[in-house]
Image (cartoon, rainbow, N blue to C red):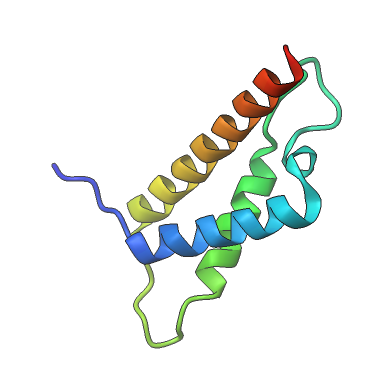
Length: 92
């Protein structure tokens, strides 16, 4: 069975993610409390996806739930890449 991917939703979510990264930095997406140092906060990933969903045209149909889940995973993967890059830059 093929995966359902909504490229426009993914592009909007990435655009909003980069705006938030520029405005607030990577630490905005990391959990402040907890036992792991670099733990991505799921609520912030959901915030990016929900904002991308709200920014869509009213005439466009609602995306498939699997497309939304795929978008959430892709945004999380991109944040993981940013965290790994930041860790390499600091020497951890």
